[in-house]
Amino acid sequence: MLILFNFFVIFRKTFACPKIKSDLKTGTSIGDLSPEDISIIASMGDALATGLGLWPKTTIEFRGAAFPSGGDATIDGLVTIPNILREFNNHLVGVSHGMGTRDQLPETQLSVAESGATTDKMPEQARELVRRLKNLVEVDYTQHWIMVIATIGTEEIEKKKRRSLLFSFIVLVLLLLPISKYEPSVKVCSRCTSPNVGALIEAIDILQAHLPRAFVVLLGPIHVSFPTKLKGNLLKSRCECSRDASNAFMENLSADWKKAFEELQEHVDRSPFRPSTFGLLAIPELTITSRYPYGLFIPNKPLLNRRGSTCSTLTYFAYRETSLGHNYATKWLWNRLIAGENYNLSAAVLSQDAYFCPSIGCPYFRNTANAHGCQLLSLSEAKEKELLLGGDGKVLKKV
Image (cartoon, rainbow, N blue to C red; front, side):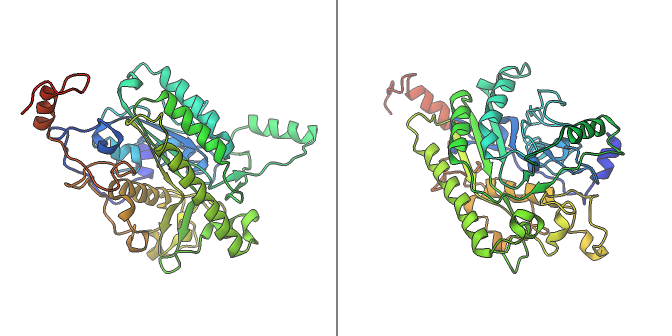
């Protein structure tokens, strides 16, 4: 573990935000959900969530270092969403540690993502997550807030339609040999198709039906660009399926994803069956800008890297802003959750931005429930309300 910690040490940035639960009533709905309320973290999706390739020159899934689920080291050594949340609640359940597929690691690590997964796989992952939550013995998931981070759309694994029996036998033999010498080659490609909206809706409906208190954050494909060329996504040139595509094709594809996520958000927000303690934040793109954006990728793949897997062709001066792909993803997502849509990418310099603390005026995760304003309720006011109202909501005592 010490080796892993040293491998991922970055410039020390201790994260410290004031706590509010001793003063304010929080966690009564998705609109007043504080980072302190999150007791369980889970992740779904594709290779971005599994940490595929984060260990240099391998196709191992390093879930303990992936930004949506990883909990190896601490925030001073490894910047991930779970490690930030542990600054608010050090008893966070579901955090991922180490390397391995979802079936190789303990089921108490609630990362059900699979490398190569597309939107078609999301319902199956939702069912698997529900199954694992029901088997938890550490906490009763029905009594605690769960944050589910799902990344989908960035990559697909190319599969040959026809494989001879000899080829399959060779692959099997290679897989049984030490991975350090015979690592299976995995081709990863950025998305070149529109999402399956029906599958996404089904997955969210499954979560809504079984998770009484949940905040689901759905992230679409990553969009990496230069600060001066925000519309140009560098993923385009990293895959065969998109390399020769026209800019118009890519813009239309991006529009399809945006439309799908808007439809999904509306489906949840307008559902007559949605409890006030279930919410979705659908973000069509995970947007990252950098002066050295090529240094944020795993070599020859459209996947974000971590410190230590930097491309050897980069200069020393670019090194400080390279190999930080998952760090930047963490920072962008966290600041987006805290600041809301006002977190403007064009004005955000991720290498210089600090990690935001919840604001005094709205110390909650920003979502559609509080997009137009936040209501603050002190503990004393909440207690007074409880004295005035009965369990059925009827006034017992008039002031």
